[in-house]
Image 1 (spheres, rainbow, N blue to C red):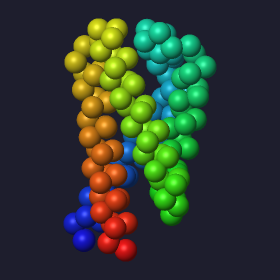
Image 2 (cartoon, helix red, strand yellow; image 1 turned 120 degrees about the horizontal axis):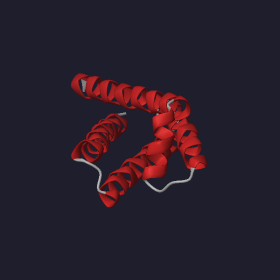
Image 3 (cartoon, one colour; image 1 turned 90 degrees about the vertical axis):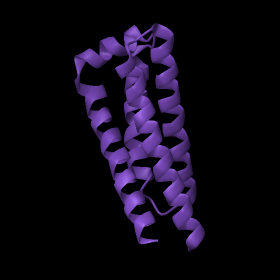
Length: 120
């Protein structure tokens, strides 16, 4: 159980940090405005996604199962959508692999969370 807790806190911490960093970047980095346009998304979507990722980074730590589950589902949809969007526009491998790696970390976080919640 100690190993599971360590994995949960490490992966969840990484996800939260990544989401807080991307929130900051989405709102302050002009290159990301261009990146969203390149993917075919309107500019307001960048702002909405930043807010959603910020809320998910917080909600994933709340002691409420519904808040956690919604966060995990929303983030998973976001990463899968990013993978698809980058593939469709023909971006290089880095732009496709990065969300796959973050999605894998999210899956490990979710599985360890579920394992811990089943133990209680």
